[in-house]
Image 1: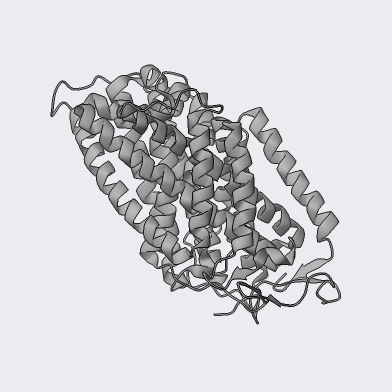
Image 2: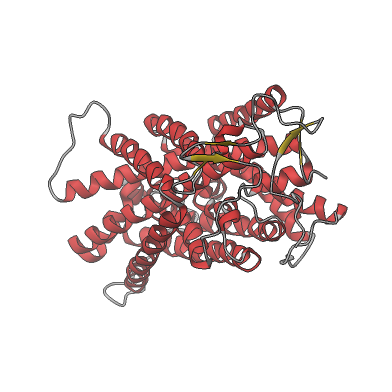
Length: 479
């Protein structure tokens, strides 16, 4: 299969084709290495790819958002999640085709930069890095909430700390997960696989019971509320809020350089994870709003599903969902930290960030400096404790990237460069990428104004960085 970076992957060069003087061609010492021809080892199979996608998406969607979403849209929040799933699927298909043609670490950044040029790639790549940082912070705040709830169940209070307990716990786990990723991608993937299998087993049992309970099998049938109790417009604003739940499929693409048999496993992992998770989301909102009603459910905040489980199954149910919530939010944060670091790695190898950021630790085979550049900003954002802003800014930056990914596919199909030879081609071309681009861009209009301003500022800053630091960089494979 042809590849745009023929002899060693993505390499940034200046116009003259020379490596900048302050960035050596290769650097080695006892523990690190950077060379143009170094590639990350392919250690992640189909199950691992699905685990990254499902494990990232299942956390926020089921365990953090139900209360917030029900407050905004009522029972129609289920439709909000369905809309998010459809948009994600419209983007997952074009992303799958591009990923089989360019199975390299960096995901959307790599696709856009090789099809639309370096400036677009820089905006998308820096935006993807920071978008994943915002998403990771959101997941870690949710993880902190669940840990506090678990401790409360056993009578342990963390009141009196100088910072909110859930924030402190989120900070601690940010450090721990960054350290775990330094220890090796294979270890991270194995942990992710175990978490996702256990999590899906718990959720399948719980949601099956919840659906049967709502249907009256175990008691009185639940009389549903008016579906659009909050009106129809909040369905779209809520879809924009919860779209953070669907970032996992793209994170599979960011580790494409570490996926075994990418021509088969990348499409299956991305499309499969979107379909599976969308079904879980819709059923979860149905069960949750059937148990309590939207208004009461919203009052429980980020741990609303714990109270739903308590109502259905008593104390054992609450403990079970608390455990599942811990697994899910941990899994989301774990995969997001990993993917954020791979975005830094790809940008550095292309000289859009300092080249030393892509050095690889010889002992573990991981980009340890890139991991630090992901983990540091995550700590800052966790400390803000702004759940909705963190979620929406992450969604904004990813939606911009998704729209451009769809455009990138249209560009490459039209230009048809010799190296573009994907093993998977999407059905319904060009309708699907056009719809994916329009839907992704359109959803941004329904976001909170502050989130749009922050996201736009990050994009503007990314472009200014490109003009200042890398305006003369050209990429192998630019078309």
